[in-house]
Length: 526
Image (cartoon, rainbow, N blue to C red; front, top):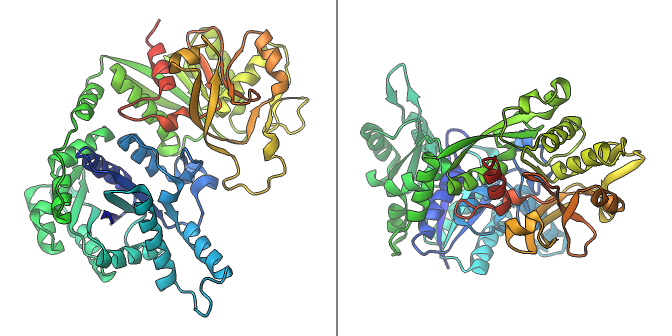
């Protein structure tokens, strides 16, 4: 069996448990250990796929088709490996599994209860993943905050498992700075640990999130009142670059203390390539302005994978992308003036009708002014509609998602999507292969004529319009394996490429996605 690391959070949500877990996992991976991340979410949704990005943040899509919490994006970007849908436990998923077992008669004669039946299912799930992945270490992040009703069963399963397996418990908590008294306050941390103890859990390591590094007094208080070793009080201050977090935790000795608590030896840490990239990000040779023209502008995390993919490319190219999220409803109302100082534009994915005409105007502006444009999923569809309207002369070209009765349905629902009533997990999801046209821009960018990217959509460009588009100069440069679906489009332009896929989901800090790297490079090639 593997060693176990459990990560909980206290005081308030949004402290960065996912980033902290991913950073510790990266440090351990750099020591030659195979680390598998698991995330537990208390919500009753089976997955976050039906949640609005404004409410929950971005939905991350895995290669196996899983729609999961955005923390899995951090795991993949940091560890450089694909995660799996099974690695995300939600209360909805677990309850569904237990109820299915009850209906199948697996508990005949028993009264099915939260404890032990639900907690046993959680522990079995953990152990099955560890065995399947042949992990050296499994790091389990418990979503939410200690004290939330939603995560109580996961915390109870953690308590039980800690009595059965070799493990270390890390608690991430807020240490605020109070200006009126001029000091960091540890009382919230003490109360949070008190709540943990009431649940039968005692953390081995406490990581304090704060504006500045924890001072000596704060470390001593946390050690004394929370009953942890002084060397196990770790500082995790605010940073302007999330890729510095593993380096900071390494300097604090987080991985050293984890290994010591677990009683295992490992190779020396090797984070030199990572450090070089971080330094390159912090000292870019140039800057560019990127407009991200979407409609989910009320929450910073709505387009996090796109923003991170641009940063990955920038780290390798020495370019700092200054990203501005632009609401395309404002373009509908005020025109494209807001785009004029941008070096490149991205039209991201999305659903529904709001802001659509603004995206179409954006595509037209970039095409006519030779501005680099990358269209993602819905963005590709808007590029096609714009081209058919303004180049091919089909003025009423539209998508059936926008206008069900359109006379020219140039974008329509996939045939296999018709008649599907359920919304959760029913889109075209996960990694799909595409065939790229020989000597096309995208084939040259990828260096291959066969690639694989991840998808999340219900609508496609109508194949009935492919010939008309190509006859008028728009190249369908990538198709599905069977040749029926348009996966990539391009025109003769500095960079004007659309993809039905979401290549941001396969970008890694140490290995940027080729499309994003090429797009960012094009913004400097005047």
